Length: 53
Image 1 (cartoon, rainbow, N blue to C red):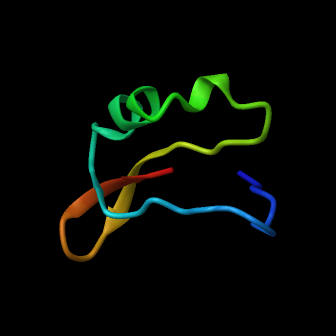
Image 2 (cartoon, rainbow, N blue to C red):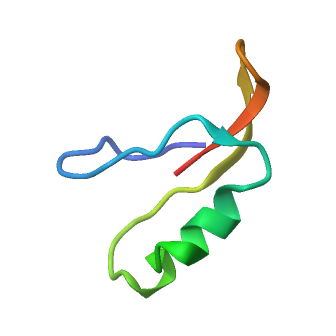
């Protein structure tokens, strides 16, 4: 997977695994005309797995 670097934006980290899509929808990110990455079930030392937007 290759994701471009962020020049102007926000990263939402430490999302409970499996909740990323819910937050994506709540924030209305599908309506944006820009790149948005939702990464699910990323390995996390603290919580085992997490999601990142």
